[in-house]
Length: 341
Image (cartoon, rainbow, N blue to C red; front, side):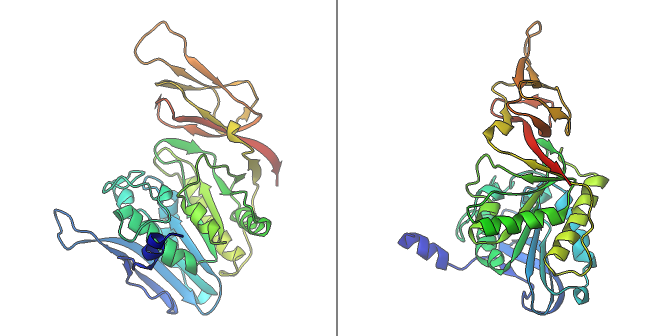
């Protein structure tokens, strides 16, 4: 670590919490981030947070809206915050329904203030942009408190997914096993060993580098939520808290299909702009070499589409959502089926 990096680590975060993380009971408050703007010279961004604590025990950090156009997390976590009874838990639960609160309020993936993608800006900076300051607070204040981290995602406005909970392959076999156990406890209809296109700067990577048990989800997409996807999130949150020993009662089990992303061949990326014709729907069987999507030209009739074919057998686990695609956009995600349980 360079001298400048060490100095950066020692600078205090500008964010202050209106809750006491060490106090028993339930508290509803804010992470207050000063932000001077045209309509409020001495204003602040007020990120809602709930802390419930009952004595010593493990800490679960539960987050949603890391990207602001994903809604299962905010709904399930606002419900938990409104209903959690400290007398029924052992340990501590920290609930942040909307991590990137400015993005959440504007219904966009990234922040309208600085265009920051929170899930690509870790470890953040205490003297950086608004989004970098949020990342820094999670990196240096909230993640060190946590034993288990659940970050609830969906596809937002540009992707749609089978509803799955996921974990990553990690160098530490014991840590990976703990993450896989938590993923299975969440008990989504699908459980995925997820391969990231680029994990640099991700919340996931920051938590895993600290040795934390980290799991995430993709529970749908299209810039909305459904009754089914919200129910999956609610049940999964409760299951994870039971798995951690924070909440009493047994884990609610259901059928889950184990999926894997063994290589970059899982991703199908468009090389042209155009009109998308899906050839398969989510959950359908995919065969290597079969057409997975076609992209039709936008500006001329009489021309054939560019056809994209799968590189491996499996199921269609994710797809581009809007009807138009640009070169470089992910068209589809194919996952291998390991087993059903």
